[in-house]
Image (tube, one colour):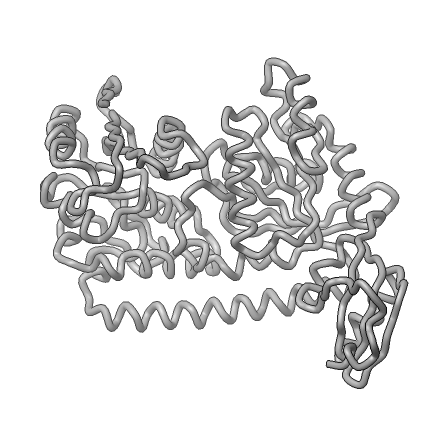
Length: 452
């Protein structure tokens, strides 16, 4: 099924044509039409004008061109008719698919996929040295297996890599430009190795910073959510700060931390993290590991959901799936159903609360429900205790002391190598005991089993 959109008069940006494929039997978080709508928003964020789309249902991707030969011919006609300069596929293309499609469509048309488009957006929005390193690494790892003659038609040049320099004309290579992509693969691999080492230093620096925060006993809350759910707006509201906000996908990439006053005179550090999206490229998840550690090490997750979005539940599930993949499933979570002010019937949002864990309806923009949200956060951080049993070596004296000071010890057994402690601790401290937890016994555990 093909659909053409009216072309704008004298479009100032490149024209893009979208292609989506629905595979029979393959479960997707979003229906194809909604996924293409999201792809169009990504294209707009990247600086493109979407002029049409083409869809196809297949049992499996075509071995050469992803879509069938007949659809390729239809696509060629539509691209010529709409004067499209870029064709973007909603799924990640293999190097062969991209190469074959490029040959079919000709060198005057760029063939991209969702991954390349997201990489381009990240390159535009990365402003700190850490963000630039992460984006550059993701770009090189994505383009390395695609280093063939197909890239010689790309006109974009970017100096320094990772989006450090401005670019002209087109989308797809904001960062490693034509010259860099034509060099020997060995040099590219050497650059990848260097970037990973630099990011290891970043990770070590973040770990030292987190250790300082833990010693200060100030709990941390990581704001997570689908891109454009309103995390930065919420952080600005509760922390009275000025984090950059824009009504577009991936407006902010670099994590921002602010101190927030909670009810009862308590405090917490809130960190705004990069937004998630369905089909988030694996290369990005791996490259942004240092940043995503802020989520894994948090005491509490504040999951912001755009309740006004037609696919709010799907977006929620997409984020939860990514969090599970990151290993953050053990961290307590509070849900903020945001943008309630944009609903025609706000009562529908209140009814939806039961479908989300520990949820509060809010409007980060207008401030509705913020007090209720902060009270729930304060309760989860300081008043909610979770049953736990841990086996700690004596070298972990700080954790043993923390359990005694902040928790409720119900049973303790000393062995030659360490101690087994059972009781209840505040939910905000669960992450600190990650890796030391053991399942509660059904009977009294002998002392020799407590040895380490």
